[in-house]
Image (cartoon, rainbow, N blue to C red; front, side, top):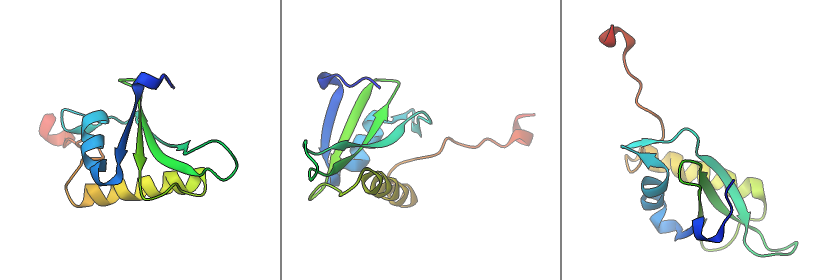
Amino acid sequence: MNQHEESRHSYPLMYLAKAWRQHAQHHGESDPQVEITAVPASHGPRGGYWSAFFAPRSGEMVIIQGAGPHPTHAAARDFLTWMLQQLHHNGNITLYPRVYDQEAIA
Protein backbone atom coordinates (compact mmCIF):
# COMPACT_ATOMS: atom_id res chain seq x y z
CA MET A 1 0.00 0.00 0.00
CA ASN A 2 1.17 3.46 -0.86
CA GLN A 3 0.86 5.43 2.37
CA HIS A 4 2.23 8.80 1.25
CA GLU A 5 0.43 11.71 2.87
CA GLU A 6 -0.45 13.29 -0.50
CA SER A 7 -2.30 10.11 -1.53
CA ARG A 8 -4.62 10.20 1.51
CA HIS A 9 -8.07 11.72 1.24
CA SER A 10 -10.59 12.20 4.05
CA TYR A 11 -14.35 12.51 3.57
CA PRO A 12 -17.20 12.91 6.04
CA LEU A 13 -19.51 9.88 6.12
CA MET A 14 -22.27 11.81 4.33
CA TYR A 15 -20.03 11.94 1.22
CA LEU A 16 -19.24 8.20 1.14
CA ALA A 17 -21.01 7.62 -2.20
CA LYS A 18 -19.14 10.54 -3.79
CA ALA A 19 -15.82 9.30 -2.41
CA TRP A 20 -16.47 5.76 -3.69
CA ARG A 21 -17.46 6.94 -7.17
CA GLN A 22 -14.45 9.25 -7.38
CA HIS A 23 -11.76 6.90 -6.09
CA ALA A 24 -12.99 3.29 -6.44
CA GLN A 25 -15.13 3.22 -9.59
CA HIS A 26 -13.90 3.40 -13.17
CA HIS A 27 -16.37 3.73 -16.04
CA GLY A 28 -19.24 3.12 -13.62
CA GLU A 29 -17.93 -0.16 -12.22
CA SER A 30 -16.06 -0.77 -8.99
CA ASP A 31 -12.45 -1.81 -9.17
CA PRO A 32 -12.31 -5.38 -7.77
CA GLN A 33 -8.84 -4.64 -6.35
CA VAL A 34 -10.14 -2.02 -3.88
CA GLU A 35 -9.32 -3.06 -0.31
CA ILE A 36 -11.67 -2.25 2.59
CA THR A 37 -9.54 -1.44 5.63
CA ALA A 38 -9.26 0.89 8.63
CA VAL A 39 -6.71 3.41 9.85
CA PRO A 40 -5.96 4.57 13.40
CA ALA A 41 -7.94 7.70 14.31
CA SER A 42 -5.12 8.76 16.62
CA HIS A 43 -2.13 7.16 18.23
CA GLY A 44 -2.54 5.30 21.48
CA PRO A 45 -4.57 2.38 22.78
CA ARG A 46 -7.87 4.32 22.97
CA GLY A 47 -7.66 6.10 19.65
CA GLY A 48 -10.06 3.92 17.70
CA TYR A 49 -10.20 3.46 13.93
CA TRP A 50 -11.69 5.24 10.94
CA SER A 51 -13.15 3.20 8.11
CA ALA A 52 -11.08 3.43 4.94
CA PHE A 53 -10.50 1.94 1.54
CA PHE A 54 -7.36 1.68 -0.57
CA ALA A 55 -7.60 2.04 -4.36
CA PRO A 56 -4.50 0.36 -5.83
CA ARG A 57 -4.95 1.77 -9.35
CA SER A 58 -4.39 5.29 -8.07
CA GLY A 59 -2.45 4.44 -4.90
CA GLU A 60 -4.97 6.44 -2.88
CA MET A 61 -6.13 5.78 0.67
CA VAL A 62 -9.60 7.19 1.33
CA ILE A 63 -10.59 7.70 4.97
CA ILE A 64 -14.26 7.97 5.91
CA GLN A 65 -14.88 9.90 9.12
CA GLY A 66 -18.17 9.51 10.96
CA ALA A 67 -19.35 10.96 14.26
CA GLY A 68 -16.56 9.14 16.06
CA PRO A 69 -13.98 6.43 15.51
CA HIS A 70 -14.87 2.74 15.74
CA PRO A 71 -13.49 0.80 18.71
CA THR A 72 -11.70 -1.86 16.63
CA HIS A 73 -10.17 -2.32 13.19
CA ALA A 74 -12.75 -5.03 12.43
CA ALA A 75 -15.68 -2.82 13.50
CA ALA A 76 -14.51 -0.04 11.18
CA ARG A 77 -14.18 -2.46 8.24
CA ASP A 78 -17.53 -4.11 8.94
CA PHE A 79 -19.28 -0.73 9.15
CA LEU A 80 -17.84 0.44 5.82
CA THR A 81 -18.75 -2.85 4.16
CA TRP A 82 -22.32 -2.53 5.45
CA MET A 83 -22.61 1.12 4.35
CA LEU A 84 -21.33 0.32 0.86
CA GLN A 85 -23.83 -2.53 0.55
CA GLN A 86 -26.66 -0.16 1.53
CA LEU A 87 -25.54 2.42 -1.03
CA HIS A 88 -25.36 -0.32 -3.68
CA HIS A 89 -28.89 -1.52 -2.87
CA ASN A 90 -30.17 2.07 -3.08
CA GLY A 91 -28.53 2.51 -6.49
CA ASN A 92 -26.10 5.21 -5.34
CA ILE A 93 -22.98 3.20 -6.23
CA THR A 94 -22.13 0.03 -8.13
CA LEU A 95 -20.13 -2.54 -6.19
CA TYR A 96 -19.94 -5.44 -8.61
CA PRO A 97 -18.70 -5.55 -12.18
CA ARG A 98 -21.42 -6.05 -14.75
CA VAL A 99 -22.11 -9.71 -15.44
CA TYR A 100 -22.39 -10.32 -19.15
CA ASP A 101 -24.60 -13.07 -20.50
CA GLN A 102 -22.16 -15.51 -22.10
CA GLU A 103 -24.83 -16.83 -24.48
CA ALA A 104 -25.52 -13.34 -25.81
CA ILE A 105 -21.82 -12.87 -26.57
CA ALA A 106 -21.41 -16.23 -28.36
